[in-house]
Length: 198
Image (cartoon, rainbow, N blue to C red; front, side):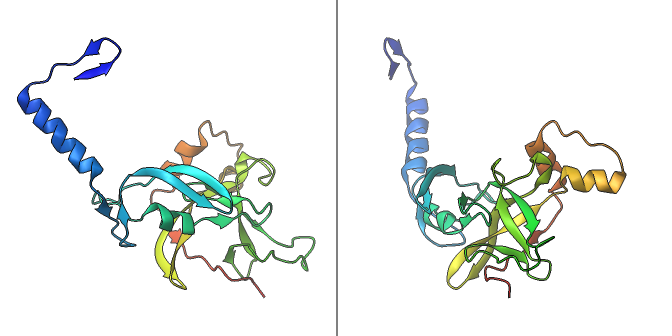
């Protein structure tokens, strides 16, 4: 078997058969457990709101693929503040509308986490998040349908500000993603309301 250039890899008959078997597993489309659509590749393109990303569909705890790329794309939402897409797996911020302006209008495209407190899901882009200390969760599949489409939800973790307010001490987080994975492990997915607050 020629790998590249002048490099040749010699395989035994048994190794060739194993390689053929592994290639056949990769090539065969698999049925996504939740949405029921065929998935031919774990890594693929997801398009939403005129933006395309390459994503890898994570396997569930049983090793199954839960969704196809089209359904992952349909779970994409728009940032309440800038309107840019928030894809599954993106870090999010949660801010309340109002504060000093209680009559501030909630954008039509905004995802409302809590209607009473008027908390909206925003992106973690530098133009929308006041700082990295405001990152408070990930946008992930919620394993629920609303109006016939799969929706996402926030898997929350305590932000640096939350920890500082709780402990009364300064907080330094060297790796935000690692912090999020460790502290979000036992937290629940917050159900989302996709309608506008009144």
